[in-house]
Image (cartoon, rainbow, N blue to C red; front, side):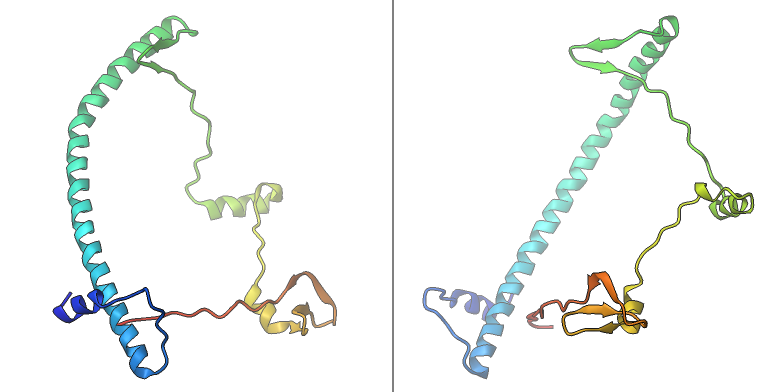
Length: 178
């Protein structure tokens, strides 16, 4: 942020109501907005540097602990497994933690999904294939007629129920600098 932008920030008085009435007053507002944006960028850059430094520190500290954590977990899991082999109903539960297990589910591993789909279609097993249907809104807007109330009318003159064309409100954006 340069000296001129610093002065612009200091001169902002929000107590009295300012109105933009001509090109000079609009230009004044843009200078104020530019100064605010510059200060905001400066603050964000500083914060980003600090956040990055703290995140690096955190990752380093957590990484130090990860090896010990994995080792200790492997010890208690090994104990749990050996006891579970002896007694299928064994439970390991202490005031400081517990170990539980859940048998893995069976999943289908597919190397080439399209090939499997083609085989199912050839064999007549279409019930095992999902078909996703979605409206093609751009073609509907192009090919259908639109009534004054926004109703969509197809080539046969029939109204498409459950759908209508609406106009979204105008959006405005203010860009400063650049």
